[in-house]
Length: 254
Image (cartoon, rainbow, N blue to C red):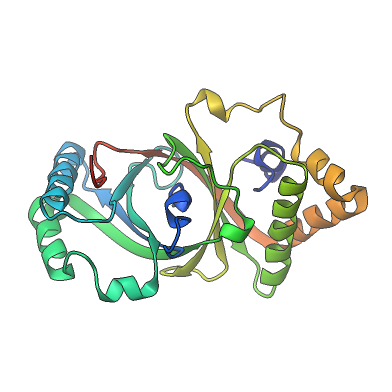
């Protein structure tokens, strides 16, 4: 998707779990594993994920374990498994010992996985307009931005001003920002846009376009400055769509 399309669609406003990370007394760390099933073994992988979810229920795990399936882009067919609302210190004292969790994973899932990558992201609540619903949306539109070296402050100041504009104008679109903090290229930011259906991906004629929203909030000169900072700070970007899989996820109390 061209950047101008992105700007007009969402106002450049994994990952779908930011609302979980925003709960009181919870942290902003989101731990994610990207698991690619072996060719022809998706049914076995999904059956294993269901077994793993049932096992977490048997262990009375107090934390959700959420699963998304990647539907488009270079990572099509990869599953993202994650927990949100964490502090780094929580990793020192998991509710279920790591050795038990890994052993169960190897027992019911490991044989069906071709590759696994772990990453940690920080949810950025001060620049996000997350929906009130605590559950992930059915779909999430994901944009990954690689910021040029030395341009991080320009990028952060731009998204801060965009958030301020969205609040000042009461812009109704929801968006969630994350920063990759471990497990990949530094300067990587992720924008997650929730959607309740495929139809919700359509442009919304009753919502003010991004540039018009900025102009209303700050005037034409500042709106142009914000867009210019984005254009000059972003080295590359990519997009994909992920679908929340509640049937493969573990949700306490469900």
